[in-house]
Image (cartoon, rainbow, N blue to C red; front, side):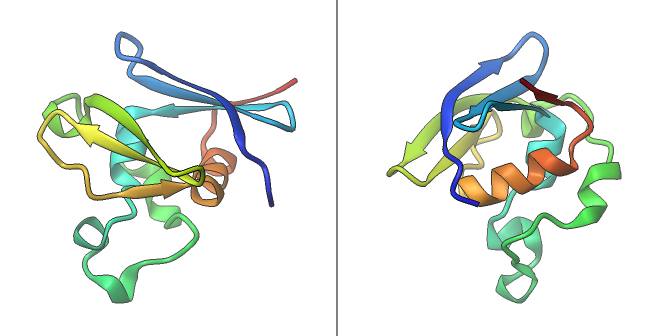
Length: 113
């Protein structure tokens, strides 16, 4: 998997981030899913629980609307990832393209063009 995003948008009203990939696939990520899927060691419960693949349990985890699930900003990390800055100040997770694409494949809202 070498796909890279061609467009990333954040819709704070709908509470969704949308990524369009260079192969034409568009994934829609609810904010709650992104927070549940945060790949940082703190959210994963330590380095031993970190993985290149999203944990399947995150796809059924309900996350309510509060500062922990509201995106304040999205920052590029080089040309390989994004860091999401949450309203509660959390900004440790580095969401690389591979992880985001796998996360998008597991999410229910995917649009193929």
